[in-house]
Length: 242
Image: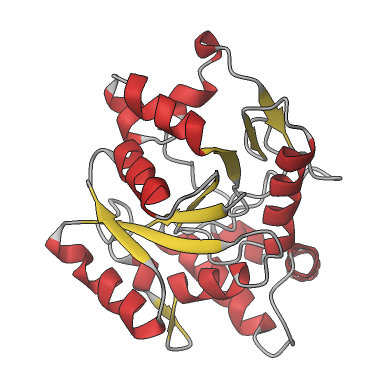
């Protein structure tokens, strides 16, 4: 069974264009996320799924320079891009990640994957159905067969633009599983969608850069508890609706 993590990435963000390659300490956000995920014990392959748009040549150039596997597909039909990526790299299980999560903790990702693998009655497992983890730790896991089925059957625009909308629609009656945090930290934003989000993540990275090994969610939470004013930087930001 091959587990492939696919990070969707593009330069055309509406709120913060080019954010995926925006640097902190001379290192792009996407590089931080990749470095975090390299510590996963369950992911067999990591692939960047970008688009064929010319502005995303920069992402391809980054991947080539770092030896990172990538795939280029439709900019608007993200569901098709995911299906093609998963098929190209022979995925049996797909881990869906987005490129706005530079602080994502690989142990959180592995916990969601593990919950999926040990509860095979589920078609789909995530830590986002009932949100208890901070935004920026979002992980969705499903089989390639379910992804293929969604690609074949999804017809609505929002279902094509958002990979798992068809899967998580209750009318389609798939078995949904959720992985919950031990404590509710859903009020925290560790994702990067706006300049305020970027400013918070920049502070976290600069404060934690000297530690050995990857950034852990527990350490990030302790840091924010020690600096409660930091959380105010992006606490007013509303998440974009799908």
